Image 1: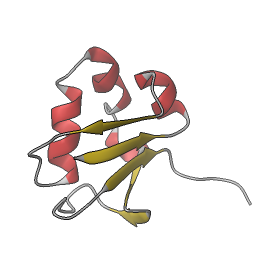
Image 2: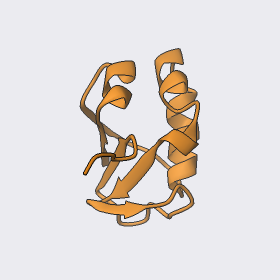
Image 3: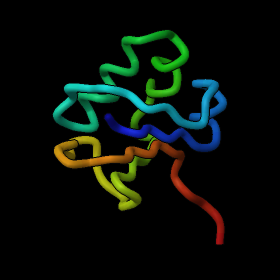
Length: 82
């Protein structure tokens, strides 16, 4: 089981702040593909991966990173500000 967290507009599009899912996804990209295939709201949230960042167990990561041993995946827009 993996906890998946959504922040900012990602959360608004999907409609939930977090969920616990069972997945066989090997990488973050596989997980995104699996989630996108669920419903249109997920597909819309993940339509432009260039506008998303991902963290695995609270460390910034990439979409090609493996999920083996990961307990938490968080999706959020790039941070801005100063």
